[in-house]
Length: 309
Image (cartoon, rainbow, N blue to C red; front, side, top):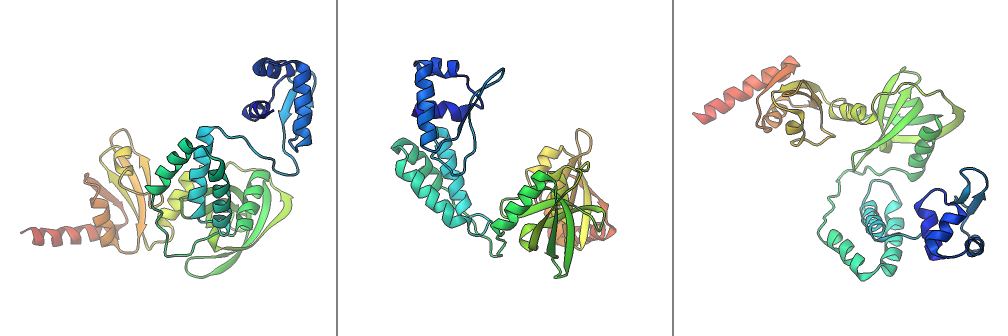
């Protein structure tokens, strides 16, 4: 029965003959064990005709799952990361699930998980950016089902506005969660931070999906520049992959500009600090805009020249 359950979990549909052959039993034995699985709460569905067979579906309750070695290690590592994640209330549940998994895990797999845990340190943020789980699930379902959403949003400067949105995609940077959505009142695409949301409500009405921008690129560009006083565009005379390894994806947007150059977009409140940060890449670059950052580069260059002499 455990072997049968493992097969049903590994593929969408199996015919009775395929299962019988893989298990080395008769078709009658397969039918009997399928009935036993159903009695234990596993929703095994059967269909006839072309493309039919046995299929493990979703039930009213979550039955036990079989995991192979790699899946068990991946699950344990993900639960450890979730315990220190950005979704409020998930940490305790993740630790409970992790303890259950650890209790039944073979020693060889437990040692692999322990190696990851013992040699990994999680840096916690000093800013509370946890997200309400209900907010996360509401937006995830609305994005999937193309359902209108209303919410209250608090901007970085403290301004509170009501938003009527068409949600499209959730994007995570590891410590923060963002939503790419079309704002119906502003008639434009917006990137909104989930921990700044309140009173998130799915309206029950659906919308026809628009042609949306690439979520990762749009969100990366928004969070790397939108909240800063100065937004700079800089051309590096080297490939994009060389520059990208020096920056966090959440701090800059790197776009190829031919084969041997790239354009970086980033923001800062202090243009001189920005210039020093850009110079740390160690590659030749030119500031395309704005003039305030170009002026800051001349000031920094003169200051460093005096220090050098």
